[in-house]
Image 1: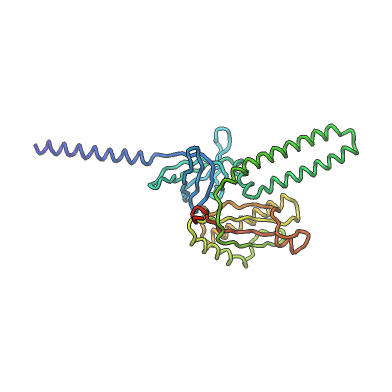
Image 2: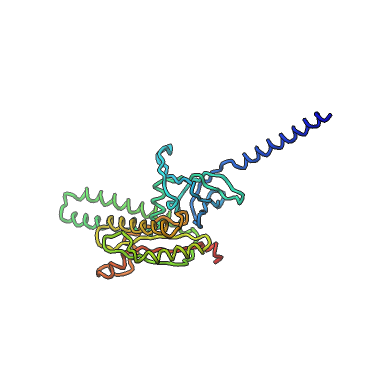
Length: 306
């Protein structure tokens, strides 16, 4: 009888163990969410999906990938700073006890990142391109008066440029509407770093200010740091766009390496180019003020309760 009872008890225990293992397996099943990033809070972000907002947790193991090609066969590894508001993403991972999706991978398309980055940069590249095209149209109109033989070719070129301008305006308007729906932030602190003409290296005199902002950030719940680089109008638009990007990236390197700020709490560097000039660019002093990087410590108003 004792052996029979022991066998029955053993069967019950084994059945319980199997049931627990099956439950654990089900809880660890992977999940997938597709939508648009509409907020960054510390090492988390919110994604607006078809079923509502999903909180996504980013960590050192999260793989961020730029997928390309029809079958998404080509993948390029990216940093978490590329995950900016307005970006369409596909997140794969598993839910934790707080019903937050812990991201194993975050995938997006490079064109979508460019669109979101352009919006963050105040649409400066699109505006500059539109201005350049308008100047080309004016030049072509003058050539029509001087060279009647080229009228048809010039008019066709004008129509092509005008169509491109309208397409760009429509794209900017559509994405800007989406971006305008994102959560607003409170600015806790702000500092500027100035640069010499054509230079991108951070002068050592600005490092203490950056480190002080980093220390303050660590006391703010759910903070993110925004870094935007600017240039004066000396030189070509393409060169100034490149200078503003490199200046912003060099400031981020200091914030991360010396300030101890994880990249999960830093928005992608904004290359603002020559947009938002703060001083007249026809003087040496004004140009010096426009060659700058603006660093802001932000907190989502939803966290602050305002």
